[in-house]
Image (cartoon, rainbow, N blue to C red; front, side, top):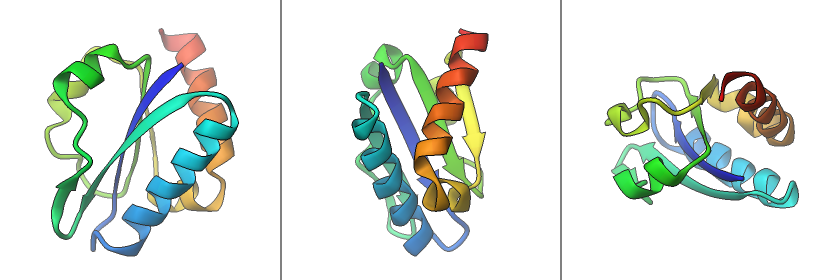
Amino acid sequence: MKIVAVTACPTGIAHTYMAAEALEIAAKKLGHTIKVETQGSIGIENKITSKEAAEADLVIFAADVAVKEDIRFAKKPLYKVEAQKAIKNARLVVEEALKFYETNA
């Protein structure tokens, strides 16, 4: 499955990047492809293009603040969690997102 994710936290420093790394590792271990965009203190990094968003099966927002340019993900199954949850148990977040996808796709 193709997954795209956006991580963001209020200060846009540690938790944003920790959540991104955790989601990347968990999704890959579960056999999925993932691209994670970070929206941190220095702006958007590893930006998900409109094409990548359109091709994605599932979107995960691990964010404690509003995601910028979220219109790119309209009409896609969107699973939202706090960044801290992705840091603590990214595998569970990915598994829950997949279940969400199955019931909402």
